[in-house]
Length: 84
Image 1 (spheres, rainbow, N blue to C red):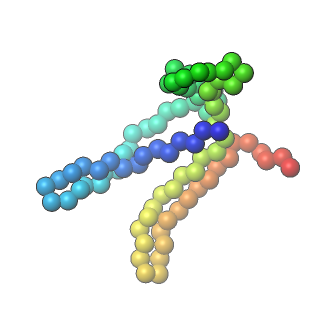
Image 2 (spheres, one colour; image 1 turned 120 degrees about the horizontal axis):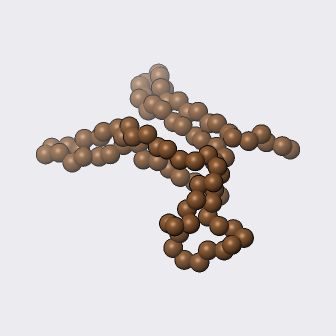
């Protein structure tokens, strides 16, 4: 299992404060077969190469909070049906 956290903001130091700016770049990646072999340092095994398929996405938006209102929102999407 591989968990990736994509950074949404960059912090730019200013003269009196640090400015927070949202990163809006498009992230393009394969849903099946994300091949990380050229980025892995150390031994790799033929029976378990570092190749991953997307299983789920957790997408959080918001964060503004007031006394009586919480404007956070999270979407979680799965790629496969759970079989029990």
